[in-house]
Picture 1 (tube, rainbow, N blue to C red):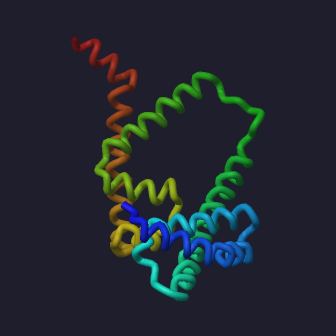
Picture 2: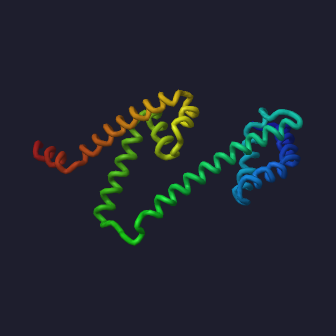
Length: 184
């Protein structure tokens, strides 16, 4: 919980350095992205108010945070662009048949369900690789392990997901249902 002293310090830091942090961000990113990055920098400052050094070193600390925030924004923008590129390559005017959509939706849900049945550690490594599209070295830093360990965890998680997914498909396949119905 923030104290009045923390609040006063934050206001002072914001009033003193906001224009300089915004200018720093504007020199590295377009207008609205720069404004978002500057705002995010001060969100981090508020959350970590007790870690900010005193005096002019506070500005150096804020520059360091702004640099990391901008890097995160650039990575996010890159992921967004890659997704747009992938989506732009898809035919827009060709609509799949309704039965194809139903099957895809069922399979997607079964895959999400299979992912949900995995251990949290397996889910996390799969999400970092597939959803966040992070390089293995970054994942290693996030998970606090070596890159080789990330590779091993990823391959094990893929195998477990595949087993879960295959089991889910087998449970719902027509041949299994017919066999179960004939046996009763």
